[in-house]
Figure 1 (tube, rainbow, N blue to C red):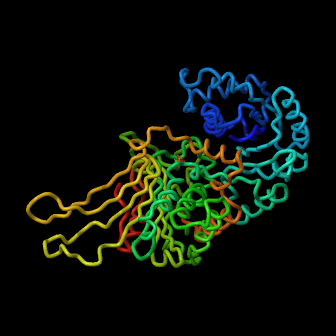
Figure 2 (figure 1 turned 60 degrees about the vertical axis):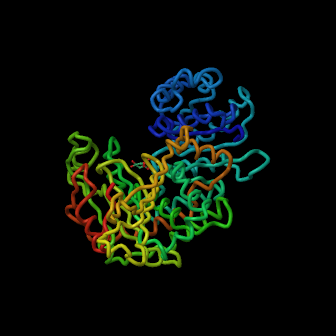
Figure 3 (figure 1 turned 90 degrees about the vertical axis):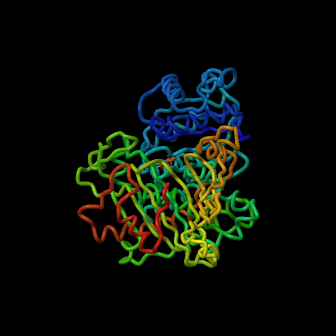
Length: 501
Ligand code: BG6
């Protein structure tokens, strides 16, 4: 179990705290996976009493926690008991005094509780204040770089981590001026998903897949991250971000590295991250003038999802009516290494798509000889191994089977594993796993500095090419579709097609 710790959340009044962080901490408590002596301090600007803050969070727990039923949360796991360990500290992110005051405030809580000498700072604020908070934490003496004696100090930094390679490096430098790299936990909630963690387990705990996991047997790989939701109430954030920064730089490249990496020498944070970085390093950089041949961007127009009419991106609140921010990206990547030479990776990511679906599909090469052609079977589907990240979490393998009858007919069939039917236990939320790992000091599921910078390097090349040739109007796709024609053309040029789902 993680040791007693002070968890100070910057941006305590924000959505992330209410929807994800507190529900995750509460779930860890209900599962007995967190010390009962944990102390949570919300740091935010508004005047608020501890009681008001607890009441606000109590409402959020009712809405967002997976432990909200009376029966599940009675006794020592009741919200009322947990809430007693939550405090509010009014502070301005840019006011030095509010940081110097934080230390005595934390000390004052120590007398009321047992002594948690470890400190975890969580940056759940807009990214523009990350650097200023970090500098103030350092100046106020709140960061101990020693890992023993007076306990440890760690920091979790939310995404987006920078806007491009340059800003990511600047932020990394500012962090490095105050924290050592092993104290820094850059969060990517995709890494906390069970099914994402299962990618390595699937590949490296089963003897039969790894021998096939290379350019001798794999024709190509498709990664799809489709959301049916639009930008919701985050229009102004998304205007600045776009799908390339919001999804590709982080979640999608994380999926790609887990699929493409070499087996690490040990199941250990740096050994795994070393291998992931090698993949990013091996991705062939696009030539500046060639980006449009490999990367498609588009924006959603009006349409229908689940029978309901939906508005276009440009009509969303907080969005410029002439916006050219992309809500969809499709791209082709090549990984220039021994394992993946000549195996293209196709990525397709978008909002307001036909349905919510995140999956990785490994397309295998055809059998070397078409034995059944003489029996009239000309087109045989390739074998496709699909890792369904969400929803309907599971894995399936498609293969051809003789359809019953006197003639030879080969039909595609599926071998299916579904989490839901194989495992009865509820899946923990990604933030539960990640918070628990950080509290125990395991950074395997967090991005290291070089990982972030390599990912930004690739993405920044695309951003620069796009900025150099601005398009007055991005291609549009209908909400509720699978993206624009340009995306189909991208893969069809290679005589392949997107997986129908
Ligand atoms: C976030 C992005 O990081 O991930 C959002 O900022 C996106 O735009 C979300 O909707 C998707 O996460 P999930 O877990 O719902 O797939």
